[in-house]
Length: 75
Image 1 (tube, rainbow, N blue to C red):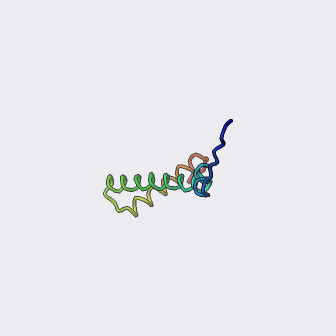
Image 2 (cartoon, one colour):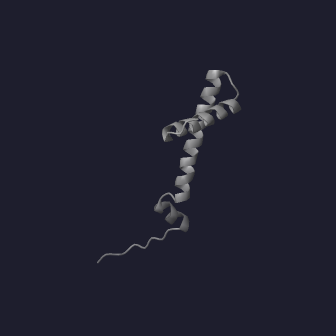
Image 3 (cartoon, rainbow, N blue to C red):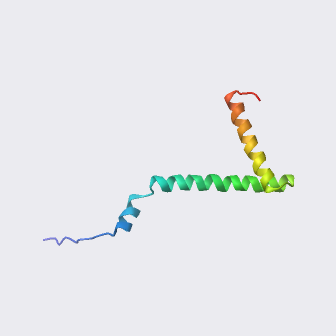
């Protein structure tokens, strides 16, 4: 009565159907963090008229300082 249609997929198509892998999710998260951080560095560099290197150092030190403050550690 009904004819069955046989469909086959390549390995690549099967992988796409499974969704993103753990590696893809990690890379995506890292990319977002790196892009946002670079925007912060450029913004600070332009705002304070300092080099990108100094801006990156300043942001890193402030982030460490904030984490210490949240943990109740005084410097």
